[in-house]
Length: 581
Ligand code: ADP
Image (cartoon, rainbow, N blue to C red):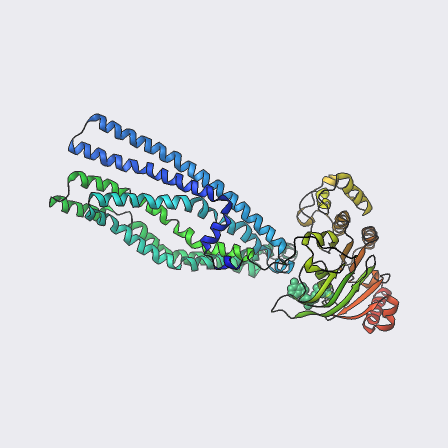
């Protein structure tokens, strides 16, 4: 990992493409063969000029025509084959890269992912990876061949007459110097472009996500300043960049192809002086015309070269991010008791400490309720138990094993986390429930839906179990979504269930149904419930009162009412709200 940080962007990119190096080497070889065939046209014309000026047979001319035709066909065949080969290797590389990125996300702490705007992740995984396509599929074979053509032609011109060789290179050298001026700032400019693009993507994702609010308050896109500002900045950035860059590009594109400008007068002078034959002069004129086309094509890849650094940097920012390290072999548990020992936690090195030395035993098969004021750290404790992050200090154990010693898959099988915003995918109801256990049969899915009390409402949907849920479950009501996610967790049948209770008040009918689903889900299981309201906790085996990241008290309701002033206060406040209903 360390080594990859010091590698150049190209070396990293080449490493990512490792499984497909054969394809890339093959495409370069075919491209070079294509170039060699392409060269035959120039040599053919040169030979014909020689034959016509110096005298030669008709058969010789026909022979060279045949050679040029074969060269033309060969060039088309080889370059097409090369392109096909490089694209196959490229798209497999991009697929593998995207798979690695997604696999990496699952090994990264949830916190890192949750704290990264989804627009940014999308841009990296979709756009930056796609941005590698021209580099891999075109730059490698085409730039190689487009550089080789002019080199071969230039060498041949030098062999014919070195003075003409020098003359034929003048415009190319000037063009390269001008292009390098633009290239100097390209990488920095591109980085800026990526930055404004990212700000725009994030603003768009946020705007679209909040479109309901914008519409509800009759706001237009223009009035959402963050969005309109980001779009404006993005456009202005490119306008400024292009205005700045155009002078270099225009000069380069004008100067480079004007190769006859130095070649014709030099050739005329040398020919007049008698030190250059007419045949060589004409041959060189023809050859020099073939010099700049491929070079200009090769220069168009300078853009690609400059963006590689940014694209690779952003992709490896994810691939090289710190991971939660877990062993490969399954841990051996002694029972299912969960213990928090002197747990401290902060969300990042710069963030303040949220939990300050939590000691807590969660007994298997019991209901443990976490209560306390909003922001006290209840969800943080629950997410640490689910393994979303590693603790900063102390330890959490499950069955006497430190969570850091339990492979992700194994911990995942042990714990079902049901949050308020359990995401439903834009797939069928059946597929969404089956996410709990992919091997479940249709019958098992329906059985669990019945047990969770969802069967009746699912059958009432247009297509029953085959109804599409919509993105984020948008086609279903809040209560229905919650019951489906409970069914999904039931199918998983994990011995520990963590339940983040809904904060928003749900209508009593739905609440009763959700409660029934939850009872079915948690029967005989260890249940940790984050209770945002006290209505549901009085029956809990243990209630844990969390205040400012510390445990202010724990025990049964009766014990807490006697010993914990904060709980008493919360309970009285709760009873007060009940009186008003
Ligand atoms: P509760 O569940 O009791 O309402 P939380 O555990 O959600 O409390 O939050 C505890 C504290 O941690 C709060 O101050 C909150 O702002 C902070 N916090 C929660 N999630 C994050 C996060 N992803 N990054 C940084 N701080 C967070």
